[in-house]
Length: 289
Image 1 (cartoon, one colour):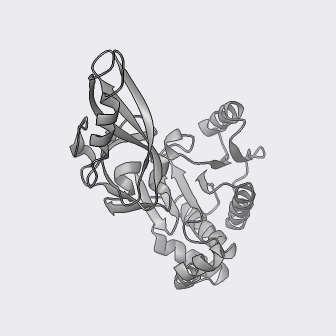
Image 2 (tube, rainbow, N blue to C red; image 1 turned 135 degrees about the vertical axis):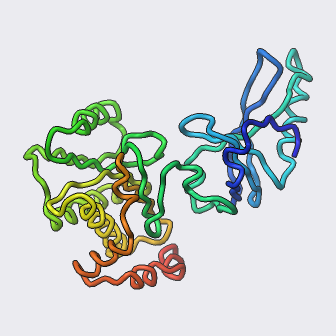
Image 3 (cartoon, helix red, strand yellow; image 1 turned 120 degrees about the vertical axis):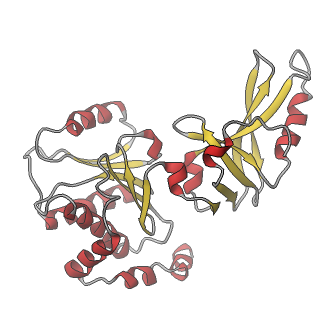
């Protein structure tokens, strides 16, 4: 294992990932106080990591379980000249959360919930997240923000977010008319948002819920069905996008994806097995070609 600085390993002891390709990762160099440092290295494919705990909102501490990379890095860092020579007490990797959602990262053990918090996989590439759509922990490269009717804090929060994130891809629907949308309008809103953001290069898109005349619960299921239909209609390859449906009250995670399939079949005649067949690995291969 090498000279690794361990933290509370038990917190994520069931989560093991494997790199399917060579990946540049950062590591911390733990010198005797008061010195510290960091570095970057190419970690070869096939290397497996076990997680410790959050380093911050963006990263996890981790150590390798089938490699002696920490040992080799420790020897290299410990051999520096000058006042730090011989003072390196250990090396530990830290991994940005976005690494976990790349196609090149394989989950050997564990699931998204252990890393991501309250996250539920609804369908291929569609996730329900209990939380704040503005949270950096989502690591989204774009957001679709739909302001609901009524007095709601998300309206003022969205304005502040847009002002402070001018370079971030955002599809913003301010709903100045205070409209409670119909199910048909919901689908149009979802398609417009995803079409716009996807065309601009966004591949990890977070969106909040859309309030409709169908009421709570059914609105979320209709929105899930709309996202499924968009992926199907646009022939998005598997792992081509991650759509994060975010709600502070857990509205999306409480939904039954099979009910969303029912909405999908009723609204446009698409059956669940058609979605999976159309997005098979064979189609992915054709798309890449």
